[in-house]
Amino acid sequence: TLEGENDIQGVFRLTATHSLVATWLTYFLHEFIELYPNLRFEIIGSNPPLDLQSGEIDAAVRPYMQNAPLLTQIPLMRWKLSLFATAEYLERFGTPQKVEDLDHHRLVVFHDIDAQFLPSYNTFPLHMGTKDGKKREPIVKVNSVPGMYNLVSRHVGIGCFSKDSPTFKDYQFVPVLPDLVSTEVEVYYIYPENLSHLKRIQAFGDFLRKKVLEIHPGCV
Image 1 (cartoon, rainbow, N blue to C red):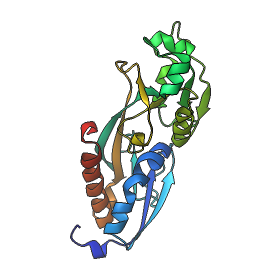
Image 2 (image 1 turned 30 degrees about the horizontal axis):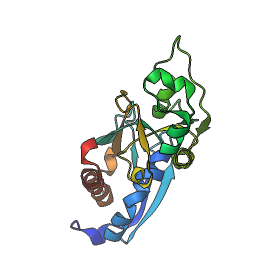
Image 3 (image 1 turned 90 degrees about the vertical axis):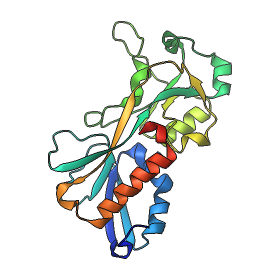
Image 4 (image 1 turned 120 degrees about the horizontal axis):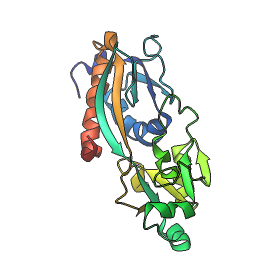
């Protein structure tokens, strides 16, 4: 453990995107809690960036926040998003051989109701390879990544996920169009510059960087 662990206590108010809270952050947070049992967490899932200057939030784990000069933003990792389905789905509907074949498949995508704040990264299968700027109609739009996992695992359609997510290994998915150039998500550890002296800020940042290197070194 880090020096001064007995001094790390109180409430740590942390925000992250809904998907990072559900499929990444809470996956290993128990390890940090074991290191610092005197610390209490308040975790807020929010795709729109919350105001880190208000004093109500200590830190964020999310894509880069634009026009925020008073924030320290440390790169954590870069996730590549790709298409996957179950073997049962592909046996029933066929395996796409080229991107245009997605026109005839069921697509499950994340419905980001806050897209004005955060780009909806995993909707690229709706428009990639289409003609005249037309978008494909998904069979399901859902604003829950765990919900997407459930739907795709039950053979509803083809979904967009990152193999770097710790929860991905819990599912038996088959890559679809593996050579397709997919989109990437860059994730940062973000906190107000005036909180950089806090031991909990420093300790959690060190912990996150260690876990990224440990869990998915290929996406740093």
